[in-house]
Length: 285
Length: 267
Image (cartoon, rainbow over all chains, first blue to last red; front, side, top):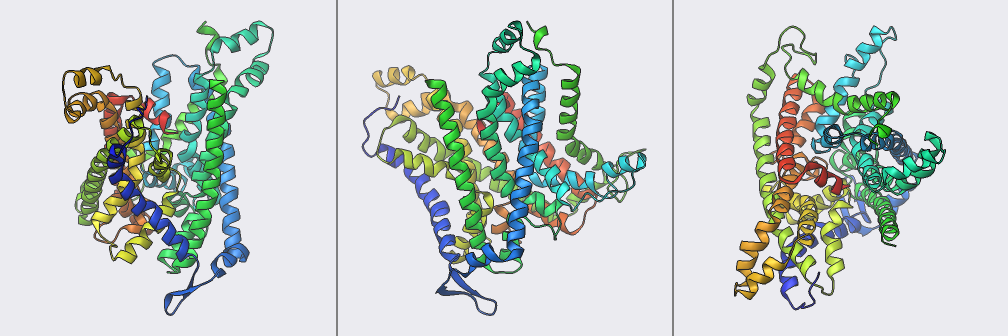
């Protein structure tokens, strides 16, 4: 496919993009990395001296550790819920006939294109003290339950936003499964459950795994959902960075937290690449 | 055969609940937007367009909407030009540093927008460029270009090159071949990429919130700031308008490229 006559043409074609991406991705990241080692003083701002103090603070101070722990905990919970909802849903979708299959696939992954602010606002209306959910609770005689500005609200909305990222890879791996294989298992005497566990599940594990990695990474760095549904008190990593930059004005500390978020994300993404490559090798070999 | 694969009643109940969960917040927004009341209530006896009218009486919302529209249209257009050029280089040539360039172009997909936001804020602060609409747009180009590049690469790799070779044999210059043959053949990838880039830029919040100034606030950032201070049905009306814009773009995308193909490729 690729012709071998290299020369300068490919470089000329790629140069404008490469320059822009170097200037607006690589350079700013290096600057932020450097910034995270700068001394910050509340009176005089960022100084030229270097220090490891910001990293020491965020890795030892219980205020920061609590927020990181909440971030990881809620991201893990979101991932588990997305897997338990998204994987069966993808399986059900794959067994539907047309046109329902296409319609519902669009209904489930289409909201991906709606701004996350809009979706967060929708949930804050549903979960608020006068929202629909509480009205149903009151009608059932359960009284008003505080959901908005709790971790529950954050997780509900995160699951809502992340669900397509789980359905898509599981759906993709189910597409490669010949439905006759499952039928063959039934004919050979396997129960529906056994066929599901021994035939379908092994096929979707890679999809499930790559979906989980993406959902976890995106949840751990989510901003709008915790900001709008967690309130001021319940912070996650991204809202913490926003506070350090915009309210505390301690950019170096904020930069250190952002670098930490980036490193965790890159580790997850590398794991994701491994999963995808392993899957590619398996389908080829 | 198809009977064997029908979903059972439990599966269909589960499916109904999931679809309900997915659509609930969007449906509620669209209903509340038509409320005649002063609070976030579902319209019961009558519907009103007063909150839609209220949106257009807020000059800051109108200005932000126009900002978003411009930023998204320009960012998507430049991203398409850059991605087609880079896509040709990556697809057609084997050269040193090809893998590194590919990784560079796709890197914004792996970096949280939060991190890109603070990184660009630092750069713009050092350049004295905070609050510039041009630099904001440049940031958006970087975020949306990878989506376009993926669609362009997919279109290029599925391209039958024999028409191009025939044109070359008949004496066409490489520019003519590109303009008259290659571009028309990858046009669905280009238009699909432009729309996807437009939507992603139009919706972008997390990076923009760090690099906008009062004069360059985009619509999602304006909505975020409004929602943190007060919540009234006007937010629902703005949200409903955004859903409408997104839905229109989605329908177009579906016509041009097949939405499932684009989104499933996006995972």
